[in-house]
Length: 319
View 1 (cartoon, helix red, strand yellow):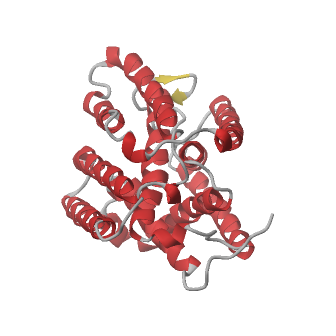
View 2 (view 1 turned 45 degrees about the vertical axis):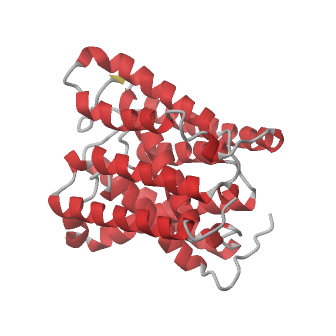
């Protein structure tokens, strides 16, 4: 496989750092999974987290550019990434003695599994790449990484996975064999689905993102991200329909994203509108889980990203 390099005036290191910061912010700070106080208290863990998110999302971005993957295929890769992180590195998808959340069955936290797959696919991967394309579009016009970059990033990522697994087991999150086997099978299915979708999408008639923003996908996504935490285990009888609704939303999001072209060929004003609403949704939805300093940081960064994106898209003649 030919690994052509990015133009020299666009540093791949800077692009990786931008992607790392955006993806870490969306997945950790906005959701309240990591606090500002925690970052200051454990700076080494923060740097490892940046590498963990940055390397993996950058590899998805590079593959997407290199093979001109359409948005639906990128969404599947986001589901793959979410499953890999939550199911293999920190074992939150599996039901363990220290981690039982919402509806559990067959050794799985079923509701959480579907929820967190979507969260990473839409927030950690797609929204990160949307923002990058709005604010720094040239960084997604050409492949980001060289062969040497992969030779560094893949081993480092594997090492981080190993230590996260060890830390999770030490903390008491010890999964059963069956759910781990099923997660590995799910990962293989997602990779196969991404490959098949990338082949079929080459011949599909695609639509403009701006033509579909009013179809309710953002309202449904907001409900899917917020309502599970609103109800949680307070009303056990609704956990089954709630889990089924999340599964339907996961499939619906694929059908939605699968209508569109590559990120770099989409309307940047529409990408700005979509990503801005996503940031607002997560800003509201994650407020219950954030500390006051994290809330302030989340609000400030969201405002900066939204205004910066606005300043970029309003001065261009977009297609």
